[in-house]
Length: 149
Image (cartoon, rainbow, N blue to C red; front, side):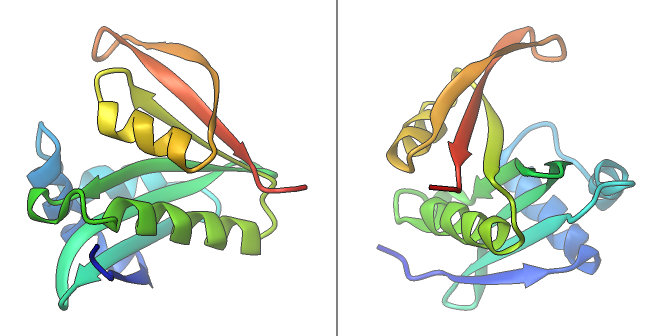
């Protein structure tokens, strides 16, 4: 189990996020892609996981509605997978959202990302629905977790 250090960073670190993203997902994205996505978003959150001072993963999210925080992207480099880094990022994002008064966390996941589906269930998320993703011609599973009660 890795003991990652999770840092809240600003948009100045978007080149690092883009680099990490491009090592995890395809097609590669640049920092401008992330800047555009955050444009006009309230309460953007960017977390970087460091293991032995090396970037190991990232978490991004933003306010979807006044009481709902949306986890946009979470990624962990292949060398750091299955070591708890993603769980630590998810827990840090949840803690941040709860500390900022959000009542619900939401994220979407493609049905073929089995590890993320399992992690969502492990962390107490419920399936709230499905959404068709025309860009990928696949279903997205919508997960939600209540932060109250």
